[in-house]
Image (cartoon, rainbow over all chains, first blue to last red; front, side, top):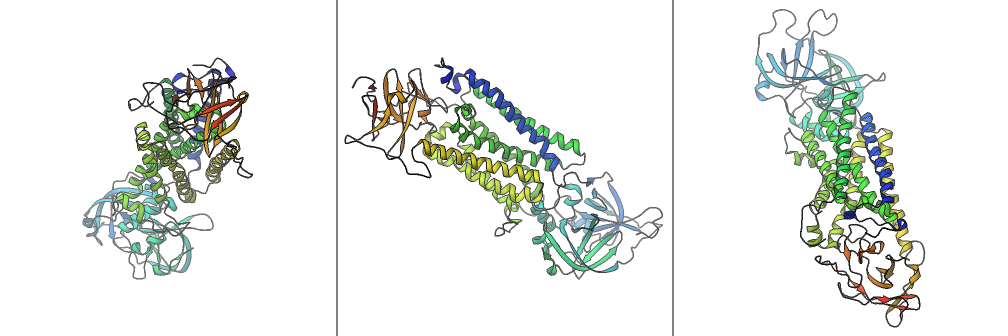
Length: 254
Length: 353
Protein backbone atom coordinates (compact mmCIF):
# COMPACT_ATOMS: atom_id res chain seq x y z
CA UNK A 1 0.00 0.00 0.00
CA UNK A 2 1.41 3.39 -0.99
CA UNK A 3 0.82 5.43 2.10
CA UNK A 4 4.35 6.67 2.63
CA UNK A 5 3.26 10.28 2.58
CA UNK A 6 1.12 10.84 5.68
CA UNK A 7 -0.56 13.80 3.98
CA UNK A 8 -1.74 11.46 1.21
CA UNK A 9 -3.22 8.65 3.27
CA UNK A 10 -5.73 6.48 1.50
CA UNK A 11 -8.06 3.99 3.14
CA UNK A 12 -8.59 0.62 1.50
CA UNK A 13 -10.85 -1.59 3.56
CA UNK A 14 -9.06 -4.84 2.95
CA UNK A 15 -5.61 -3.41 3.62
CA UNK A 16 -6.04 -1.74 6.99
CA UNK A 17 -6.42 1.76 8.35
CA UNK A 18 -3.60 4.30 7.87
CA UNK A 19 -2.20 5.82 11.11
CA UNK A 20 -3.64 9.36 10.91
CA UNK A 21 -7.04 8.02 9.97
CA UNK A 22 -6.84 5.47 12.76
CA UNK A 23 -6.23 8.28 15.27
CA UNK A 24 -9.34 10.09 14.02
CA UNK A 25 -11.45 6.93 14.21
CA UNK A 26 -10.20 6.11 17.70
CA UNK A 27 -11.72 9.42 18.80
CA UNK A 28 -14.79 9.62 16.59
CA UNK A 29 -16.16 6.09 16.98
CA UNK A 30 -16.13 6.06 20.81
CA UNK A 31 -17.90 9.44 20.82
CA UNK A 32 -20.51 8.09 18.38
CA UNK A 33 -21.02 4.88 20.36
CA UNK A 34 -21.30 6.76 23.67
CA UNK A 35 -23.79 9.17 22.08
CA UNK A 36 -25.97 6.26 20.97
CA UNK A 37 -25.74 4.56 24.37
CA UNK A 38 -26.62 7.85 26.11
CA UNK A 39 -29.95 7.71 24.29
CA UNK A 40 -30.53 4.23 25.76
CA UNK A 41 -30.31 5.88 29.19
CA UNK A 42 -32.42 8.91 28.32
CA UNK A 43 -35.28 7.49 26.24
CA UNK A 44 -36.74 5.12 28.88
CA UNK A 45 -37.03 8.01 31.34
CA UNK A 46 -39.39 9.92 29.07
CA UNK A 47 -41.83 7.11 28.37
CA UNK A 48 -45.44 8.14 28.44
CA UNK A 49 -47.54 6.35 31.06
CA UNK A 50 -44.98 3.55 31.14
CA UNK A 51 -44.50 3.61 34.87
CA UNK A 52 -48.11 3.96 36.00
CA UNK A 53 -49.46 1.98 38.94
CA UNK A 54 -51.31 -0.55 36.83
CA UNK A 55 -50.22 -4.02 37.77
CA UNK A 56 -51.06 -7.68 37.72
CA UNK A 57 -52.06 -9.17 41.06
CA UNK A 58 -51.83 -12.73 42.19
CA UNK A 59 -55.33 -13.42 43.45
CA UNK A 60 -56.35 -16.38 41.27
CA UNK A 61 -59.97 -16.87 42.29
CA UNK A 62 -63.00 -14.72 43.08
CA UNK A 63 -66.52 -15.47 44.26
CA UNK A 64 -69.29 -13.13 43.32
CA UNK A 65 -72.40 -12.38 41.31
CA UNK A 66 -71.85 -12.45 37.56
CA UNK A 67 -73.61 -9.60 35.73
CA UNK A 68 -73.83 -9.20 31.95
CA UNK A 69 -74.84 -5.57 31.38
CA UNK A 70 -73.80 -3.02 30.40
CA UNK A 71 -70.57 -5.03 30.15
CA UNK A 72 -69.64 -8.31 31.82
CA UNK A 73 -68.57 -7.77 35.42
CA UNK A 74 -68.40 -9.54 38.74
CA UNK A 75 -69.82 -8.07 41.94
CA UNK A 76 -67.79 -9.31 44.87
CA UNK A 77 -69.10 -8.74 48.42
CA UNK A 78 -66.77 -6.64 50.50
CA UNK A 79 -65.45 -8.03 53.74
CA UNK A 80 -65.87 -6.28 57.06
CA UNK A 81 -67.75 -3.13 57.96
CA UNK A 82 -68.20 -0.99 54.86
CA UNK A 83 -70.14 1.79 56.58
CA UNK A 84 -71.89 3.98 54.05
CA UNK A 85 -69.81 2.62 51.21
CA UNK A 86 -70.94 0.02 48.73
CA UNK A 87 -71.41 -3.58 49.85
CA UNK A 88 -69.84 -4.79 46.60
CA UNK A 89 -66.69 -4.26 44.59
CA UNK A 90 -67.12 -4.25 40.84
CA UNK A 91 -64.55 -6.10 38.72
CA UNK A 92 -64.71 -5.89 34.95
CA UNK A 93 -64.43 -9.17 33.07
CA UNK A 94 -62.63 -9.89 29.83
CA UNK A 95 -61.41 -13.07 28.18
CA UNK A 96 -57.76 -14.08 28.10
CA UNK A 97 -57.26 -12.45 24.69
CA UNK A 98 -58.78 -9.33 23.16
CA UNK A 99 -62.20 -10.81 23.87
CA UNK A 100 -65.11 -10.98 26.25
CA UNK A 101 -65.22 -13.94 28.64
CA UNK A 102 -65.94 -17.25 26.96
CA UNK A 103 -69.59 -18.22 26.29
CA UNK A 104 -69.32 -20.92 28.98
CA UNK A 105 -68.71 -18.12 31.48
CA UNK A 106 -71.34 -15.73 30.15
CA UNK A 107 -73.99 -18.47 30.27
CA UNK A 108 -73.85 -18.07 34.03
CA UNK A 109 -74.90 -14.42 34.06
CA UNK A 110 -77.02 -13.46 37.10
CA UNK A 111 -75.66 -16.44 39.05
CA UNK A 112 -73.13 -16.65 41.86
CA UNK A 113 -69.92 -18.08 40.51
CA UNK A 114 -66.41 -19.03 41.53
CA UNK A 115 -64.34 -17.34 38.83
CA UNK A 116 -60.72 -18.03 37.90
CA UNK A 117 -58.52 -15.60 36.01
CA UNK A 118 -55.74 -13.05 36.15
CA UNK A 119 -56.62 -9.71 37.71
CA UNK A 120 -55.06 -6.38 36.73
CA UNK A 121 -55.77 -3.18 38.57
CA UNK A 122 -54.95 0.46 38.19
CA UNK A 123 -56.10 2.77 40.94
CA UNK A 124 -59.62 1.57 41.72
CA UNK A 125 -60.28 -0.03 38.34
CA UNK A 126 -59.90 -3.80 38.19
CA UNK A 127 -60.32 -6.23 35.33
CA UNK A 128 -60.11 -10.00 35.50
CA UNK A 129 -58.87 -11.83 32.39
CA UNK A 130 -61.27 -14.69 32.95
CA UNK A 131 -60.30 -18.29 32.28
CA UNK A 132 -63.30 -20.12 33.74
CA UNK A 133 -66.26 -19.84 36.06
CA UNK A 134 -68.28 -22.44 37.88
CA UNK A 135 -71.52 -22.07 39.82
CA UNK A 136 -71.29 -21.60 43.54
CA UNK A 137 -73.70 -21.00 46.38
CA UNK A 138 -74.48 -17.41 47.41
CA UNK A 139 -72.82 -16.38 50.65
CA UNK A 140 -74.69 -17.33 53.78
CA UNK A 141 -74.06 -13.99 55.41
CA UNK A 142 -73.81 -10.47 54.08
CA UNK A 143 -75.45 -9.01 51.01
CA UNK A 144 -76.37 -11.30 48.14
CA UNK A 145 -77.99 -8.72 45.85
CA UNK A 146 -76.63 -5.28 45.10
CA UNK A 147 -78.89 -2.31 45.45
CA UNK A 148 -80.12 -0.65 42.28
CA UNK A 149 -77.88 1.95 40.77
CA UNK A 150 -78.52 5.46 42.02
CA UNK A 151 -78.68 8.34 39.58
CA UNK A 152 -76.34 11.21 40.39
CA UNK A 153 -77.75 13.43 37.65
CA UNK A 154 -76.81 14.60 34.15
CA UNK A 155 -73.20 15.49 33.48
CA UNK A 156 -71.08 16.54 30.56
CA UNK A 157 -67.73 14.81 30.81
CA UNK A 158 -64.57 15.00 28.74
CA UNK A 159 -62.15 12.11 28.61
CA UNK A 160 -60.88 9.16 26.62
CA UNK A 161 -62.56 5.86 25.81
CA UNK A 162 -60.18 3.00 26.57
CA UNK A 163 -60.51 -0.73 26.61
CA UNK A 164 -60.99 -2.00 30.13
CA UNK A 165 -58.35 -4.68 29.83
CA UNK A 166 -55.19 -3.00 28.55
CA UNK A 167 -55.63 0.28 30.43
CA UNK A 168 -55.55 -1.26 33.94
CA UNK A 169 -52.03 -2.59 33.36
CA UNK A 170 -51.81 -5.25 30.66
CA UNK A 171 -50.24 -2.65 28.37
CA UNK A 172 -48.41 0.56 29.15
CA UNK A 173 -49.50 2.87 27.77
CA UNK A 174 -52.86 1.16 27.30
CA UNK A 175 -54.30 4.33 25.80
CA UNK A 176 -53.83 7.13 23.21
CA UNK A 177 -52.66 6.92 19.60
CA UNK A 178 -50.13 4.08 19.66
CA UNK A 179 -52.68 1.90 21.43
CA UNK A 180 -55.66 2.87 19.28
CA UNK A 181 -55.66 -0.23 17.05
CA UNK A 182 -55.26 -2.57 20.00
CA UNK A 183 -58.14 -0.87 21.82
CA UNK A 184 -60.31 -1.20 18.70
CA UNK A 185 -59.51 -4.92 18.55
CA UNK A 186 -60.27 -5.31 22.26
CA UNK A 187 -63.59 -3.46 22.15
CA UNK A 188 -64.73 -5.21 18.97
CA UNK A 189 -63.88 -8.50 20.70
CA UNK A 190 -66.05 -7.68 23.71
CA UNK A 191 -63.68 -6.19 26.29
CA UNK A 192 -65.63 -3.64 28.37
CA UNK A 193 -65.11 -0.01 27.29
CA UNK A 194 -64.22 2.44 30.05
CA UNK A 195 -64.40 6.22 29.94
CA UNK A 196 -61.39 7.78 31.72
CA UNK A 197 -61.91 11.32 33.02
CA UNK A 198 -59.44 13.50 34.88
CA UNK A 199 -61.05 15.86 37.34
CA UNK A 200 -59.65 19.26 38.24
CA UNK A 201 -57.62 17.78 41.09
CA UNK A 202 -55.95 15.42 38.60
CA UNK A 203 -57.72 12.32 39.95
CA UNK A 204 -58.78 9.69 37.48
CA UNK A 205 -62.45 8.80 37.40
CA UNK A 206 -63.65 5.71 35.59
CA UNK A 207 -67.06 5.23 34.01
CA UNK A 208 -68.57 2.09 32.53
CA UNK A 209 -70.35 3.05 29.35
CA UNK A 210 -73.97 2.12 28.74
CA UNK A 211 -76.44 3.03 26.04
CA UNK A 212 -79.94 4.23 26.93
CA UNK A 213 -81.16 0.61 27.10
CA UNK A 214 -78.49 -0.33 29.63
CA UNK A 215 -76.52 -2.46 27.18
CA UNK A 216 -72.95 -2.36 25.89
CA UNK A 217 -71.75 0.30 23.44
CA UNK A 218 -68.63 -1.51 22.20
CA UNK A 219 -69.26 -1.58 18.46
CA UNK A 220 -70.65 1.96 18.47
CA UNK A 221 -67.52 3.61 19.87
CA UNK A 222 -64.74 1.94 17.85
CA UNK A 223 -64.23 5.13 15.89
CA UNK A 224 -63.84 7.24 19.02
CA UNK A 225 -61.24 5.40 21.08
CA UNK A 226 -57.90 7.02 21.94
CA UNK A 227 -59.15 10.54 21.18
CA UNK A 228 -60.59 13.28 23.40
CA UNK A 229 -64.33 12.74 23.58
CA UNK A 230 -67.16 14.59 25.28
CA UNK A 231 -70.13 12.60 26.57
CA UNK A 232 -73.29 14.09 28.02
CA UNK A 233 -75.37 11.62 29.98
CA UNK A 234 -76.69 10.30 33.23
CA UNK A 235 -74.12 9.23 35.82
CA UNK A 236 -75.22 6.31 37.94
CA UNK A 237 -73.51 5.20 41.13
CA UNK A 238 -73.42 1.41 40.89
CA UNK A 239 -71.65 -0.72 43.52
CA UNK A 240 -68.29 1.04 43.95
CA UNK A 241 -68.28 2.27 40.34
CA UNK A 242 -69.98 4.72 38.02
CA UNK A 243 -71.99 4.03 34.89
CA UNK A 244 -72.35 6.77 32.28
CA UNK A 245 -75.59 6.25 30.42
CA UNK A 246 -75.95 8.05 27.10
CA UNK A 247 -76.80 7.45 23.47
CA UNK A 248 -73.44 6.66 21.77
CA UNK A 249 -74.63 8.62 18.72
CA UNK A 250 -74.35 11.77 20.85
CA UNK A 251 -70.70 11.19 21.85
CA UNK A 252 -68.67 14.06 20.46
CA UNK A 253 -65.12 13.84 19.20
CA UNK A 254 -63.24 16.96 20.32
CA UNK B 1 -14.37 -7.93 -6.57
CA UNK B 2 -16.24 -9.93 -9.13
CA UNK B 3 -14.77 -13.39 -9.24
CA UNK B 4 -16.85 -15.71 -7.11
CA UNK B 5 -19.64 -14.94 -4.68
CA UNK B 6 -19.21 -15.56 -1.00
CA UNK B 7 -21.76 -14.74 1.71
CA UNK B 8 -19.32 -12.20 3.14
CA UNK B 9 -15.75 -11.64 2.07
CA UNK B 10 -14.49 -11.21 5.60
CA UNK B 11 -11.43 -9.22 6.46
CA UNK B 12 -10.14 -7.60 9.62
CA UNK B 13 -11.85 -4.25 8.98
CA UNK B 14 -15.23 -5.89 8.44
CA UNK B 15 -14.83 -7.96 11.61
CA UNK B 16 -13.90 -4.93 13.69
CA UNK B 17 -16.74 -2.95 12.09
CA UNK B 18 -19.31 -5.62 12.85
CA UNK B 19 -18.06 -6.22 16.38
CA UNK B 20 -18.38 -2.51 17.23
CA UNK B 21 -21.78 -2.32 15.50
CA UNK B 22 -23.32 -5.38 17.12
CA UNK B 23 -21.82 -4.70 20.54
CA UNK B 24 -23.26 -1.19 20.48
CA UNK B 25 -26.69 -2.51 19.48
CA UNK B 26 -26.67 -5.20 22.17
CA UNK B 27 -25.59 -2.71 24.84
CA UNK B 28 -28.22 -0.21 23.67
CA UNK B 29 -30.98 -2.83 24.05
CA UNK B 30 -29.54 -4.04 27.36
CA UNK B 31 -29.32 -0.53 28.81
CA UNK B 32 -32.77 0.41 27.49
CA UNK B 33 -34.39 -2.53 29.25
CA UNK B 34 -32.16 -2.22 32.33
CA UNK B 35 -32.96 1.47 32.89
CA UNK B 36 -36.68 0.76 32.40
CA UNK B 37 -36.57 -2.06 34.96
CA UNK B 38 -34.64 0.18 37.33
CA UNK B 39 -37.41 2.79 37.14
CA UNK B 40 -40.32 0.39 37.72
CA UNK B 41 -40.93 -3.24 38.50
CA UNK B 42 -44.49 -3.28 37.12
CA UNK B 43 -43.59 -2.97 33.48
CA UNK B 44 -45.16 -3.96 30.22
CA UNK B 45 -41.94 -5.61 29.07
CA UNK B 46 -43.28 -6.35 25.60
CA UNK B 47 -43.91 -2.64 25.19
CA UNK B 48 -40.38 -1.87 26.40
CA UNK B 49 -38.86 -4.18 23.80
CA UNK B 50 -41.04 -2.69 21.06
CA UNK B 51 -39.67 0.76 21.94
CA UNK B 52 -36.12 -0.48 22.35
CA UNK B 53 -36.05 -2.18 18.93
CA UNK B 54 -37.85 0.69 17.23
CA UNK B 55 -35.69 3.45 18.67
CA UNK B 56 -32.49 1.49 17.96
CA UNK B 57 -33.50 1.04 14.32
CA UNK B 58 -34.43 4.73 13.95
CA UNK B 59 -31.15 5.93 15.49
CA UNK B 60 -29.17 3.54 13.32
CA UNK B 61 -31.01 4.78 10.22
CA UNK B 62 -29.87 8.32 11.02
CA UNK B 63 -26.27 7.14 11.26
CA UNK B 64 -26.56 5.20 8.00
CA UNK B 65 -28.01 8.20 6.17
CA UNK B 66 -25.27 10.45 7.55
CA UNK B 67 -22.38 8.29 6.37
CA UNK B 68 -22.87 8.97 2.65
CA UNK B 69 -22.78 12.78 2.76
CA UNK B 70 -20.13 12.86 5.49
CA UNK B 71 -17.91 10.71 3.27
CA UNK B 72 -18.47 13.16 0.41
CA UNK B 73 -17.46 16.04 2.67
CA UNK B 74 -14.41 14.29 4.18
CA UNK B 75 -12.61 11.09 3.29
CA UNK B 76 -12.06 10.52 7.02
CA UNK B 77 -15.52 8.95 7.16
CA UNK B 78 -14.87 6.42 4.39
CA UNK B 79 -14.12 3.58 6.85
CA UNK B 80 -17.72 3.93 8.07
CA UNK B 81 -18.95 3.60 4.48
CA UNK B 82 -16.86 0.53 3.82
CA UNK B 83 -19.20 -1.93 5.55
CA UNK B 84 -22.35 0.18 5.63
CA UNK B 85 -24.39 -2.65 4.17
CA UNK B 86 -23.96 -4.67 7.36
CA UNK B 87 -25.24 -1.65 9.27
CA UNK B 88 -28.24 -1.52 6.96
CA UNK B 89 -29.05 -5.20 7.44
CA UNK B 90 -28.69 -4.77 11.21
CA UNK B 91 -31.07 -1.81 11.09
CA UNK B 92 -33.59 -3.82 9.08
CA UNK B 93 -33.34 -6.68 11.59
CA UNK B 94 -34.10 -4.27 14.46
CA UNK B 95 -37.02 -2.81 12.52
CA UNK B 96 -38.31 -6.32 11.82
CA UNK B 97 -38.13 -7.25 15.51
CA UNK B 98 -39.97 -4.02 16.35
CA UNK B 99 -42.67 -4.86 13.81
CA UNK B 100 -42.92 -8.50 14.89
CA UNK B 101 -43.42 -7.58 18.54
CA UNK B 102 -45.82 -4.72 17.78
CA UNK B 103 -47.86 -6.96 15.50
CA UNK B 104 -48.08 -9.70 18.10
CA UNK B 105 -48.70 -7.42 21.05
CA UNK B 106 -51.15 -4.90 19.63
CA UNK B 107 -52.88 -6.94 16.93
CA UNK B 108 -52.83 -10.64 17.88
CA UNK B 109 -55.28 -12.45 20.20
CA UNK B 110 -58.20 -10.61 18.62
CA UNK B 111 -60.94 -11.22 16.10
CA UNK B 112 -58.82 -10.44 13.00
CA UNK B 113 -55.59 -11.74 11.57
CA UNK B 114 -52.84 -9.50 13.01
CA UNK B 115 -51.60 -8.35 9.61
CA UNK B 116 -55.17 -7.43 8.59
CA UNK B 117 -55.74 -5.68 11.90
CA UNK B 118 -52.60 -3.62 11.33
CA UNK B 119 -54.12 -1.92 8.30
CA UNK B 120 -57.87 -1.88 9.04
CA UNK B 121 -58.26 -1.26 12.78
CA UNK B 122 -57.68 2.47 12.45
CA UNK B 123 -59.28 3.56 9.19
CA UNK B 124 -58.66 7.32 9.34
CA UNK B 125 -56.44 7.37 6.27
CA UNK B 126 -57.84 10.74 5.21
CA UNK B 127 -57.14 12.42 8.55
CA UNK B 128 -53.63 13.73 9.26
CA UNK B 129 -53.75 13.70 13.06
CA UNK B 130 -55.61 10.40 13.35
CA UNK B 131 -53.73 8.78 10.45
CA UNK B 132 -52.88 5.09 11.02
CA UNK B 133 -49.15 5.49 11.57
CA UNK B 134 -48.73 1.70 11.54
CA UNK B 135 -49.28 1.64 7.77
CA UNK B 136 -46.34 4.03 7.25
CA UNK B 137 -44.09 1.74 9.30
CA UNK B 138 -45.31 -1.27 7.33
CA UNK B 139 -44.51 0.37 3.98
CA UNK B 140 -41.07 1.43 5.19
CA UNK B 141 -40.39 -2.11 6.39
CA UNK B 142 -41.17 -3.48 2.91
CA UNK B 143 -38.65 -1.06 1.37
CA UNK B 144 -36.03 -1.92 3.99
CA UNK B 145 -36.65 -5.61 3.34
CA UNK B 146 -36.11 -5.20 -0.40
CA UNK B 147 -32.88 -3.35 0.33
CA UNK B 148 -31.64 -5.91 2.86
CA UNK B 149 -32.59 -8.82 0.59
CA UNK B 150 -30.69 -7.33 -2.36
CA UNK B 151 -27.74 -6.03 -0.37
CA UNK B 152 -25.35 -8.73 -1.54
CA UNK B 153 -22.99 -8.14 -4.48
CA UNK B 154 -24.81 -10.93 -6.34
CA UNK B 155 -27.80 -8.61 -6.71
CA UNK B 156 -25.59 -5.61 -7.36
CA UNK B 157 -24.04 -7.37 -10.34
CA UNK B 158 -27.20 -8.93 -11.71
CA UNK B 159 -29.42 -5.91 -11.29
CA UNK B 160 -26.58 -3.66 -12.54
CA UNK B 161 -25.23 -0.85 -10.40
CA UNK B 162 -27.62 1.89 -11.66
CA UNK B 163 -30.74 -0.22 -11.01
CA UNK B 164 -29.38 -1.43 -7.68
CA UNK B 165 -28.46 2.11 -6.72
CA UNK B 166 -31.93 3.38 -7.63
CA UNK B 167 -33.55 0.63 -5.59
CA UNK B 168 -31.34 1.46 -2.63
CA UNK B 169 -32.14 5.16 -2.89
CA UNK B 170 -35.51 3.93 -1.60
CA UNK B 171 -33.95 4.36 1.83
CA UNK B 172 -34.89 8.04 1.59
CA UNK B 173 -38.53 7.15 0.97
CA UNK B 174 -38.30 4.71 3.89
CA UNK B 175 -36.83 7.45 6.07
CA UNK B 176 -39.66 9.84 5.17
CA UNK B 177 -42.23 7.15 5.94
CA UNK B 178 -40.53 6.39 9.25
CA UNK B 179 -40.42 10.05 10.28
CA UNK B 180 -44.19 10.05 9.65
CA UNK B 181 -44.52 6.77 11.55
CA UNK B 182 -42.71 8.23 14.57
CA UNK B 183 -44.34 11.68 14.49
CA UNK B 184 -47.90 10.37 14.04
CA UNK B 185 -47.36 7.46 16.44
CA UNK B 186 -44.85 7.77 19.24
CA UNK B 187 -44.77 11.57 19.32
CA UNK B 188 -48.56 11.90 19.30
CA UNK B 189 -48.77 9.51 22.21
CA UNK B 190 -45.79 10.98 24.03
CA UNK B 191 -45.49 14.72 23.55
CA UNK B 192 -42.42 14.96 25.80
CA UNK B 193 -40.28 17.88 24.54
CA UNK B 194 -37.10 15.80 24.57
CA UNK B 195 -38.57 13.24 22.15
CA UNK B 196 -39.93 15.91 19.83
CA UNK B 197 -36.62 17.79 19.91
CA UNK B 198 -34.62 14.60 19.25
CA UNK B 199 -36.71 13.66 16.21
CA UNK B 200 -36.65 17.26 14.96
CA UNK B 201 -32.88 17.60 15.33
CA UNK B 202 -32.40 14.26 13.58
CA UNK B 203 -34.57 15.35 10.65
CA UNK B 204 -32.88 18.75 10.30
CA UNK B 205 -29.46 17.06 10.53
CA UNK B 206 -30.24 14.59 7.75
CA UNK B 207 -31.85 17.13 5.42
CA UNK B 208 -29.26 19.83 6.18
CA UNK B 209 -26.31 17.51 5.71
CA UNK B 210 -27.61 16.35 2.35
CA UNK B 211 -28.30 19.90 1.19
CA UNK B 212 -24.82 21.09 2.19
CA UNK B 213 -23.26 18.13 0.43
CA UNK B 214 -25.35 18.66 -2.70
CA UNK B 215 -24.36 22.33 -2.82
CA UNK B 216 -20.69 21.47 -2.48
CA UNK B 217 -20.90 18.76 -5.12
CA UNK B 218 -22.63 21.17 -7.50
CA UNK B 219 -19.90 23.78 -6.93
CA UNK B 220 -17.20 21.20 -7.58
CA UNK B 221 -18.92 20.06 -10.78
CA UNK B 222 -19.06 23.63 -12.05
CA UNK B 223 -22.85 23.60 -12.02
CA UNK B 224 -23.61 25.69 -8.93
CA UNK B 225 -27.26 25.62 -7.98
CA UNK B 226 -27.66 29.39 -7.69
CA UNK B 227 -25.49 30.70 -10.52
CA UNK B 228 -24.63 30.10 -14.15
CA UNK B 229 -23.24 26.66 -15.03
CA UNK B 230 -19.72 26.57 -16.45
CA UNK B 231 -19.88 25.17 -20.01
CA UNK B 232 -17.42 22.56 -21.27
CA UNK B 233 -15.13 24.10 -23.91
CA UNK B 234 -15.01 21.45 -26.68
CA UNK B 235 -12.51 22.14 -29.47
CA UNK B 236 -12.84 21.25 -33.15
CA UNK B 237 -11.33 17.78 -32.57
CA UNK B 238 -13.87 17.00 -29.91
CA UNK B 239 -11.48 17.48 -26.98
CA UNK B 240 -12.15 19.40 -23.80
CA UNK B 241 -9.54 21.50 -21.99
CA UNK B 242 -9.28 20.16 -18.45
CA UNK B 243 -6.47 22.25 -16.99
CA UNK B 244 -2.79 21.97 -16.23
CA UNK B 245 -0.98 18.76 -15.34
CA UNK B 246 0.32 20.63 -12.31
CA UNK B 247 -3.22 20.81 -10.96
CA UNK B 248 -3.18 17.05 -10.29
CA UNK B 249 -1.10 15.50 -7.47
CA UNK B 250 0.88 12.37 -8.29
CA UNK B 251 -1.21 9.18 -8.17
CA UNK B 252 -4.36 11.22 -7.75
CA UNK B 253 -7.02 12.55 -10.07
CA UNK B 254 -8.92 15.61 -11.05
CA UNK B 255 -12.63 15.19 -11.66
CA UNK B 256 -14.09 17.08 -14.59
CA UNK B 257 -17.65 17.14 -15.88
CA UNK B 258 -17.72 16.51 -19.61
CA UNK B 259 -21.08 16.47 -21.41
CA UNK B 260 -22.80 16.07 -18.07
CA UNK B 261 -20.76 13.05 -16.96
CA UNK B 262 -17.96 13.01 -14.42
CA UNK B 263 -14.57 11.94 -15.75
CA UNK B 264 -11.55 11.09 -13.56
CA UNK B 265 -8.21 12.26 -15.01
CA UNK B 266 -5.33 10.51 -13.23
CA UNK B 267 -1.64 11.50 -13.11
CA UNK B 268 0.83 8.71 -12.44
CA UNK B 269 4.38 7.78 -13.47
CA UNK B 270 4.63 10.89 -15.69
CA UNK B 271 1.45 9.99 -17.59
CA UNK B 272 -2.18 11.04 -17.77
CA UNK B 273 -5.14 8.69 -18.24
CA UNK B 274 -8.84 9.42 -18.11
CA UNK B 275 -11.63 7.03 -17.18
CA UNK B 276 -15.25 7.24 -16.11
CA UNK B 277 -15.57 8.50 -12.55
CA UNK B 278 -18.15 5.82 -11.81
CA UNK B 279 -16.96 2.57 -10.23
CA UNK B 280 -18.80 -0.42 -11.64
CA UNK B 281 -19.27 -1.88 -8.18
CA UNK B 282 -21.43 0.67 -6.34
CA UNK B 283 -20.88 3.72 -8.53
CA UNK B 284 -18.24 5.03 -6.14
CA UNK B 285 -16.27 8.17 -7.16
CA UNK B 286 -13.10 6.75 -8.71
CA UNK B 287 -11.65 10.25 -9.12
CA UNK B 288 -11.45 10.51 -5.33
CA UNK B 289 -9.44 7.30 -5.35
CA UNK B 290 -5.73 6.79 -5.74
CA UNK B 291 -3.32 4.83 -7.91
CA UNK B 292 -2.20 1.97 -5.69
CA UNK B 293 0.12 -0.72 -7.01
CA UNK B 294 -0.42 0.66 -10.53
CA UNK B 295 -4.22 0.46 -10.29
CA UNK B 296 -6.87 3.12 -9.84
CA UNK B 297 -8.40 2.17 -6.51
CA UNK B 298 -11.95 3.13 -5.57
CA UNK B 299 -12.19 4.96 -2.23
CA UNK B 300 -15.38 3.15 -1.26
CA UNK B 301 -14.55 -0.55 -1.37
CA UNK B 302 -11.11 -0.75 -2.96
CA UNK B 303 -12.23 -1.99 -6.39
CA UNK B 304 -9.32 -1.55 -8.83
CA UNK B 305 -8.93 -0.70 -12.53
CA UNK B 306 -5.93 -0.38 -14.81
CA UNK B 307 -5.70 3.32 -15.75
CA UNK B 308 -4.91 2.70 -19.42
CA UNK B 309 -7.80 0.29 -20.09
CA UNK B 310 -10.45 0.66 -17.39
CA UNK B 311 -10.30 -3.09 -16.82
CA UNK B 312 -9.91 -4.67 -13.38
CA UNK B 313 -6.66 -6.61 -13.05
CA UNK B 314 -6.99 -10.40 -13.48
CA UNK B 315 -8.74 -12.45 -12.23
CA UNK B 316 -11.33 -9.69 -11.85
CA UNK B 317 -13.58 -8.75 -14.74
CA UNK B 318 -15.04 -5.26 -14.16
CA UNK B 319 -14.76 -2.77 -17.02
CA UNK B 320 -15.47 0.94 -17.20
CA UNK B 321 -15.33 3.47 -20.07
CA UNK B 322 -12.04 5.16 -20.93
CA UNK B 323 -11.34 8.51 -22.65
CA UNK B 324 -8.71 9.49 -25.18
CA UNK B 325 -6.28 12.02 -23.72
CA UNK B 326 -3.63 14.34 -25.11
CA UNK B 327 -1.39 17.05 -23.70
CA UNK B 328 -0.59 20.42 -25.27
CA UNK B 329 2.14 22.21 -23.34
CA UNK B 330 1.08 21.56 -19.79
CA UNK B 331 -2.61 21.50 -20.69
CA UNK B 332 -4.62 18.28 -20.55
CA UNK B 333 -7.26 17.63 -23.19
CA UNK B 334 -9.81 14.84 -22.88
CA UNK B 335 -12.07 13.59 -25.66
CA UNK B 336 -15.70 14.38 -24.90
CA UNK B 337 -16.89 11.00 -26.19
CA UNK B 338 -16.12 8.00 -23.99
CA UNK B 339 -14.73 4.77 -25.38
CA UNK B 340 -16.65 1.55 -24.71
CA UNK B 341 -15.87 0.01 -21.29
CA UNK B 342 -12.47 -1.66 -21.17
CA UNK B 343 -11.07 0.02 -24.32
CA UNK B 344 -7.26 0.35 -24.06
CA UNK B 345 -6.05 3.94 -24.44
CA UNK B 346 -2.45 5.04 -24.74
CA UNK B 347 -1.76 7.37 -21.80
CA UNK B 348 -0.59 10.90 -22.62
CA UNK B 349 3.00 11.32 -21.55
CA UNK B 350 3.74 14.54 -19.69
CA UNK B 351 6.34 16.68 -21.46
CA UNK B 352 6.08 14.75 -24.73
CA UNK B 353 3.65 16.25 -27.22
